[in-house]
Length: 393
Ligand SMILES: Nc1ncnc2c1ncn2[C@@H]1O[C@H](COP(=O)(O)OP(=O)(O)OP(=O)(O)O)[C@@H](O)[C@H]1O
Ligand SMILES: [Mg+2]
Image (cartoon, rainbow, N blue to C red):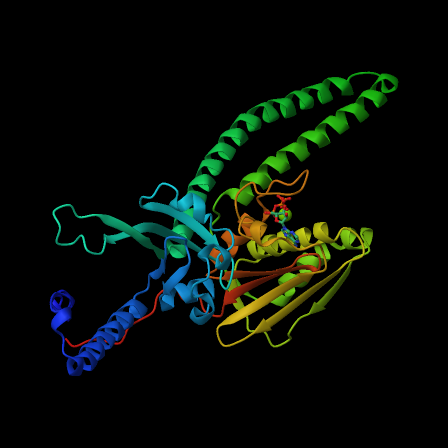
């Protein structure tokens, strides 16, 4: 493109002959088309507005990011098309402003964008000594940062988890020692008790038994807690996932009866065996089922289905509880995120750790007020690397 073309044209606009006008117009149209092709090819969204914030131009990426149709947007206030965009605040400083933004429709994304005020030389001042600039509108440039943000979040989470593991290990160490000493002292008391006459012993023995039981319980809580958050080594064997699902459900039988919950198991009987750690997977299923029960309180239905395709074995847990909002959905794997009075907010974090260690994935779908469906997918083969075709020697 000849960058001086327009300047030259303007210079000799008074001398342009009528028969030349058509050729100049065609050339301008070509250049417009050329620019539009470039703008539509770039991944960043570009929106141009006039001074009042009415849309003059959107490229294809901007339309896709916000699910807009160009024809319906022209001359409309950008603020009306993108509810939640605080346009007046963005432009009040009349300088370049950069912000991040979360978009929920048509896809959940995080964006970074900046707004640039656009000014041109005021007409007629170009050749004068004092060039006057005139505001003509704004350009909004948008970048999709969903992926970068996700990986940053994952790093933060894993750092939080490391800190948590260290803290828990410290606490266990601190609690473990006095527990041990209490245990030994109770044994000593027990020995001394045996030397007392039977009448005096009976009462004290019951008290002692309660104390011993409580200490054992405390010890097992600490051990369980540590076991849950410490990255454990996978001890994989070939297992039928259906058995692990049934065993996890059976383990919760007392609670199922207590809450009058109906558990429907639809387990495919031709599942291939998977190389998995049975205890860890059962722990993951248990955490998911427990969440479902807690969400349903009494009288709900939990449907557990297993299925297989050419890549994955999937285990779907669909409950009829209250579900979850889109906002909370992005938080439920965060350490300590809980909406329960006595929840630790670690259950799903552990589920995700176990599933990832098996090379699997978790999908969530929720209908607020109607329930939540959590699907765990485990790969048929633990494929962590892929051979590429041999290149030339
Ligand atoms: N099936 C579900 N239906 C609705 N909300 C759920 C469901 N599963 C999880 N949640 C939400 O996700 C949050 C986090 O769950 P997570 O299992 O990690 O912790 P928790 O259940 O609160 O505590 P803990 O598992 O340690 O007892 C819950 O507090 C709840 O708000
Ligand atoms: Mg839980």
